[in-house]
Each structure stands twice: as C-alpha cells, then as structure tokens.
Figure (spheres, rainbow, N blue to C red):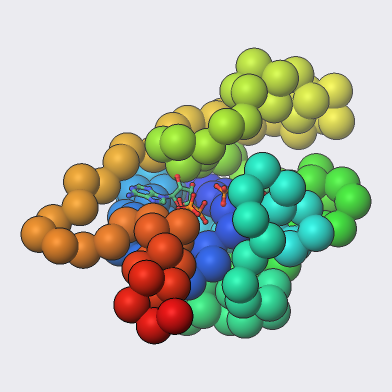
Length: 141
Ligand SMILES: Cc1cc2nc3c(=O)[nH]c(=O)nc-3n(C[C@H](O)[C@H](O)[C@H](O)COP(=O)(O)O)c2cc1C
Ligand SMILES: Nc1ncnc2c1ncn2[C@@H]1O[C@H](COP(=O)(O)OP(=O)(O)OP(=O)(O)O)[C@@H](O)[C@H]1O
C-alpha cells in the first residue's frame, strides 16, 4: 500500500487542481491531501473561500481518499500522522526540495519527494485561481 500526499491552497477548484491530484493519485494506492490554512497562505492574495470549504470540496473529488485541513503552525505534524511514502509537489510550487528533504529527515520522516506534471489549458478554460478571480472582477464589477 503506497500512501501519497499532495498539498496546496485549492481556492476555487479548476482543471489544473484536478490534474495535479489525479497525477498524484496515480503514483500510489491512497491519496491524502493537506489543504493550507488561510493564515499560512502568504505568498499570494488571501484565499477567497474559507479553509473548511476548500477542504470539503477537495475531499469530494473521486481521486482523493482523505483531505485534511493543514496544521496552523507546523507543516510536519499532518505528515507525521499520515506517514506517506511519497510527497508530490505541484509543478509550479515554490518549495525548496532539498530543504524539504533535510527537514523531513531531521524529523525522522522517511519519504520520497516527486513533482507532478503541468496541465496545458484546453480551449478557453482557466487553469489558475488568480485568473478566475481576475475574470470575475472584469466581468461582474
Ligand atoms: C509537505 C508539506 C506539508 C504542508 N502542510 C501544511 C499544513 O499542515 N498547514 C498549512 O497551512 N500549510 C501546509 N503546507 C503549505 C501549503 O500547502 C502550501 O505550501 C502553500 O501555502 C500553498 O501553495 P499553493 O500556492 O501551491 O496553493 C504544506 C506544504 C508542504 C510542502
Ligand atoms: N494548470 C495546472 N496544472 C497542473 N497543476 C496545477 C495547475 N494549476 C494549479 N496546479 C497545482 O495545484 C496546486 C494548488 O494550486 P493553487 O491552489 O496554488 O492554485 P493556482 O490556480 O495555481 O493558484 P493561483 O493561480 O492563484 O497561483 C499546486 O500544486 C499547483 O501546482
């Protein structure tokens, strides 16, 4: 049984999220997803949707076995509990893979880190939460 973890904000789901999670699910037998707490999303605008709602939407996807709202202070607490074989980072996630490997090792967590592939948008679909929000502002405000 190979346990895989994916993580992210997942604010307003789109086909890029489904692609990332499907890619991650295909790497193992069980997919757990950690949904970032709003207060920890500091590298881009604050999420529109509350954490509980983002978690519930991710949990409803067929490829996801369990979605968890992340820990408020220590990102390694859910990882220790889930004890994954593989952590799959999104194709564009800013995390430093070597730093993450060192931190996992120092916490006694033995798992592999991989990258998911990107989805090329088809036709006129929007594969970015930022672009969906921009479109809403442009058309409705
Ligand atoms: C292995 C791992 C575990 C994480 N666990 C948590 C967590 O428990 N709580 C949290 O708020 N963020 C956690 N994060 C951080 C966010 O998921 C993520 O880095 C970021 O805030 C959102 O990234 P995005 O721009 O790809 O959506 C974790 C990140 C990694 C790489
Ligand atoms: N087009 C895409 N193809 C593959 N993965 C994607 C795509 N868009 C987002 N993801 C992945 O989904 C995860 C969560 O993404 P996130 O919540 O940051 O959404 P986003 O749409 O990329 O946000 P924003 O547009 O605001 O930067 C990340 O790991 C990201 O790499």
